[in-house]
Length: 125
Image (tube, rainbow, N blue to C red; front, side, top):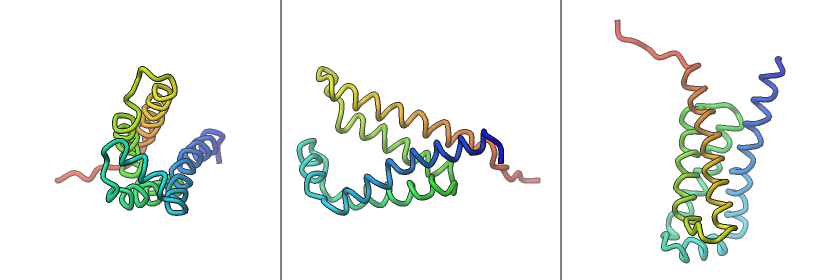
């Protein structure tokens, strides 16, 4: 196994842990998350879908399974979270969280794009 492979797996694992642990936290104590969603006029009915996405796509990212889809879905989720929850750019903490979400989305886009480039596409012929 090359150093590049080890670093790639480690980086992917660290990103995956962020989502897996967030999903577990939402299951363990959903109320603060529901309150935060209500504060931003986001329906609480979406919380189970968020948990499912964080756990399923996070595990897929961790295992390297269907990376274009799992990393792509998490990237879209991070962009949505940035604009849905952290768009008050006048407040320093919110601005930092906004940029952090976009940076994580960027890393996930790189993973999705590199995994897409490595997947052979079937051609009609």
